Length: 362
Image (cartoon, rainbow, N blue to C red; front, side, top):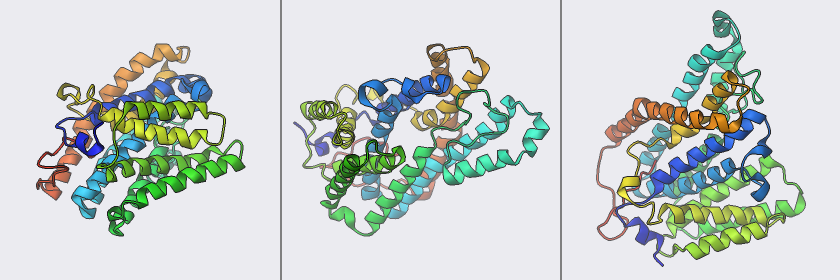
């Protein structure tokens, strides 16, 4: 069995294609609840207790914890903070403005001049950008849909940014050099979830989420920091997932599932089947897919209210990928270019020996 460090030293990995697959899984998952208004209609809910979208978000946070910890470790605090800001903010601002000012204006039931004068329009923009509010509505937009809000996925960005800030604070405090702190944090969050699960049945969803996502992010960070000791193993990954399924319905089930998915996400990212140059996407469409999938699906649901989930899913996937490509080439890639101009293209330290793996840290 190779270590994570051995895998990082290889010239290719599957992080890019895995992130895109996870983003598309979120779109597939939302295809059911958007059309019916019932989250329980999403795939995997009955089998695992969590939707396909929630499992995909877990994978995102595991990968993010791994990659951005590597970014901070290799680039330093100033470069890390600028890189994170330029990766998240431009795409988000563009998406919110496009949905509010273009899509909303096209689909509102209000007269267009009344739409522009509505305080709710500008409140939606401000709340989405400053509070990452995902249940805000636009005036006269999607009012007949089962869900009336147009940016249903932005809530996770709040937790992502909080994790980024926590990691930066840990780096500035020198905690990354005391790498035993990372598994200690993971263990603390794991025990916290277990304790709350024993005390509250069912645990409030918001409380669980506030512990779940930092636990998974910290787990990804720990796997990077202990990369020379942690070994990649399919039997371990599958064994952990099987144990989590067996523990379903108990207080141990959720934290064990989250830990298992953290390890499995990194295992899959380094799988030889995905670590091929031909599978590395030329354009990173994962962020745009995640941001635009929900509003595209909401628009299709409004335009074709009688259509079912399976009918709307193929055009939703195609339109989402098209809009994500536009976002990448018009907004996200230029922002990353600005990052390179501001930070320079100085060589980064090798991860192992003289080899430097091709890992997109964003």
